[in-house]
Length: 345
Image 1 (cartoon, rainbow, N blue to C red):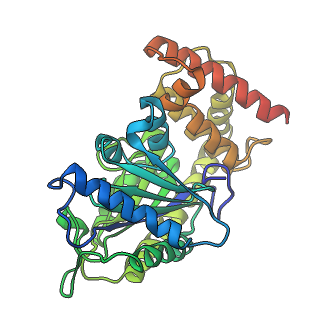
Image 2 (image 1 turned 45 degrees about the horizontal axis):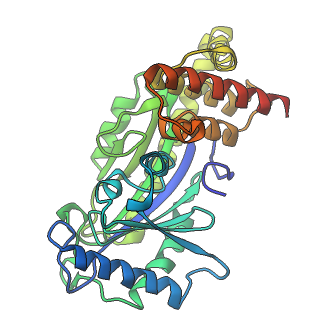
């Protein structure tokens, strides 16, 4: 099971928590400068780490060469937040190592030699850090990392130097967005070294009112300091979002509820939906479920629908290439069918 299907704390607001570490192996150039032979050696080295010792008892890891994956499978991995777009752009020499529960993934030969991450459902930054720290220790027991006593871990991008740690929380903030409070919230967090990105990270749009809040600073504070800072900030954002939701419900009442029910009606009857309309409706459905206005569904159901409606997942499901018109029609058909199954279960 992955973060999509599992229950997590504060799931009315939080979809997932992620910790990512950037590491490079001493004695090799960074990926932008290394030869294919270097990349192959690095991959073999990382693979051996998991054959020598496994970070978690009984946990199995699979190794996938990106060049062996069809384009649609690559897109699905990105849409599920299990791999990055950058990894797919280095497909000739890149690989993905993933545990059997899709919680821990290790991207090899991305922007850095190793980009490992742990992604968990709901608000679980500390647990994600604990799990990934053990994976990091397992790898470091077998290889020597590029490390400087003054600067810390050395990375291809200077913004990751130091701890190499990026912590992020994927949150659904519809009430703050609709009430136009989100701008002030994002401005405030920027003053304490945090930033907000869209659904698929840097440069992406906040589709469905989903934001990824993460640290900007990796050099100076410790890993635990970074996580604590993000934890406190996110807890305050949760409070503001929940207060904004209750204020909307109190002020708008039946009109507010009608918007949420109409979203359910559209999703269960629409024949055509593009991605922006779909994500807007999913946002309203998630809000209705979180406020217990719409019964018979869970936050995990909505997570499943959100991923199911993404372009790559639909293409994989259809088993053929879809143009825009076919894709929008197939999205509506697929969501309509699955949502009705959920409601009748």
